[in-house]
Amino acid sequence: MSAAMYLEHFGLNAPPFRITADPDYFYDGAERGATLDALLFALRFEEGVIKVTGEVGAGKTMLLRMLLERLPPDTIAVWLANPSLTPAELLHTIAEQIGANTGDAAQKPAQLDRIQQGLIDLYATGRRVIVLVDEAHAMPPASLEQIRLLSNLETPRHKLLQIVLFGQPELDALLAQPAQRPLRDRITHHFALAPLTRDETRAYLYHRLQAAGHRGRPPFSAAAMNAIARSARGLTRRINILADKALLAAFAASRHDVGVQEVRRAARDAALPDPLPLRMIGALAILVGLVASGGVAYQVSRPAIEHVAPQPHAAASPAKAPPAASVQPGKTQQAAPPAIAPAYADILGTAVATRLAASREWVASQDGARWTIQVGAAAPQQATELEPLIQRIEQVGATQPVHLYAAPGKPVGRIGVVWGDFASAADARRALAQMPEWLRDSRPYVRPIASIRPRSSVAKPAAAAPLSAAGNSVKMGFDPTAQEKAGPRP
Image (cartoon, rainbow, N blue to C red; front, side, top):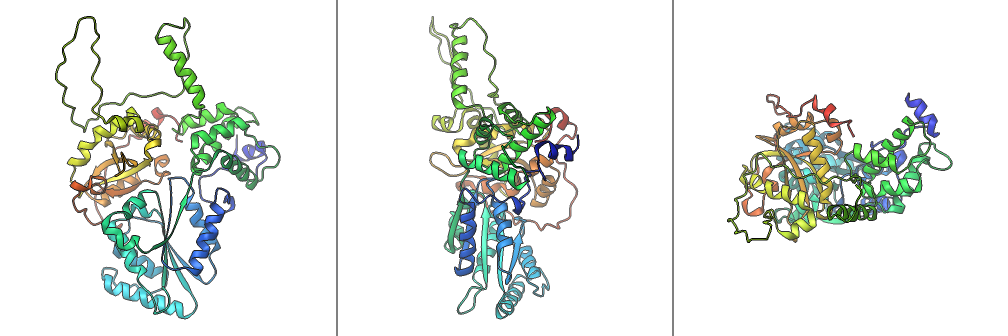
């Protein structure tokens, strides 16, 4: 079965749900179009730094690409897609893009002077320069400080450079640090991309199908679209993944309609939350409880959502056993609950809270100058969604440990997932480059371990190593043969 047969089967001119940020598929609903217009207006008539934040897969890169397409012809756009640039590399890239004499990239003061002169020359000819920083939440603090210094370049009347920072919600936490106050005070506009609602998800699916040439009734049933909305949690990248896999499942079965079963199969394959409605989960839980209590004489099939018991972590020290309790006659002794704050367990779920508790000692004991790779993050209320990601990483043969950390918050902040322990940023980048493609699709990034430790124990992180740093290859720790055991790549 070829791609042409697939397109013909559903009446399409092109695949409708690729995760690549193609401007032809831009959806202007859910305030995306209004945000784009506001960005263009702010860049044209306002000054200062602009910040755009959103969860992983919320559509930040698509918005950035649309911004690039809509900028006036007199604008030179410098897109910094690599957040790991050191300050010197950042200056060299900007100087090269605006046509300034790059000279010696190691001499930052001279480099900054050349950039300023290049900007003045461009301004004199009516040209404007905008710097777009993608994945700004992953930038080293020193590079963010360099961004602040660049924002100071101006004439007596106008700024010479406008800057837009695109990042995940971690960017807000980063800018909230006292050391980043000078940059934070320069931000004049903040745009946040909210997840799509159920109705917006259905409109998004319609839009993508029509943009790909589909006409008539969509192949997704109303129940299937609702299931996609539940599993995707309003994130457009997840919507694309689920819709694409569900269409492929229907095509493989020679069906033209996509139902809930195809969506559930797609969610399992992509390690995303099961879209089973909560009321059905509750009903199954009641039935299972009745079976356990002997009130039902027949067996109930196991629900599709499995709660996997957390495995002891090799890197975590075992918790001290509580004092032995006397057992009274006639009473059954119960196992002591894990030493986790009840509020945390209530918010995060027992499995995630247990992993977080096991990871705390590792985070606190590591040398802050070492590096790790951030592979995921979620708000506390959605922390249970991290479990499938962690399990899939472990299934594909990762020999490096997977750990969790909690950002500051009341009672607990965003939960992050990090993988590995590396001596330098260059080692971490080489390991990142060897990650499976499905994991790299979520845009992981390297960061110093000091940045995830509690502030009271944070040591000054080492400066980010240049991208061209030489060194021996680092063993990634992923077993290539384990991919078959873990199932198809999402």
